[in-house]
Picture (spheres, helix red, strand yellow):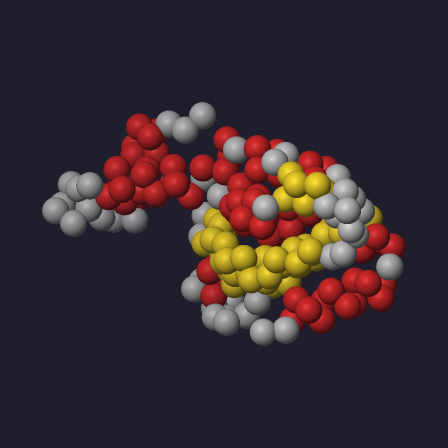
Length: 186
């Protein structure tokens, strides 16, 4: 459960630990601001994508549905630094579809947690597959990680790309390849 007081105390200790005066004018309210920020950045911890993916519409075809370029911002659980990018989702309905905004909301549920990209990619695919009951799901995530861009190796602009394929997309190389080409189109 979210504990604003603990975060504020921790941020004050952090500021003191790097040699700052946590009570100076510019930093006095920083612990409270950081606590509010983390409440927003981690709001997905208490959400379940089922809430969004269970509101479906009947659909009598099996044509692929694709939602591309869903922007997301997440926080790396290893360094507590941002990573951000785009999520691309394809699924094959099995008698029902979901409103397209619900796919973006599902991305947000998992992005708004302390996270690693590899896990987030698979969580999105598993949730869509489970709660929507698809014939197949394919998720691709492209992201820049500030823990790699701003520190450590310092390689801004590099992107990490992860995939998760379920059902027909896991079984059919050509289908997966066709969708990958659509994901890459700009």
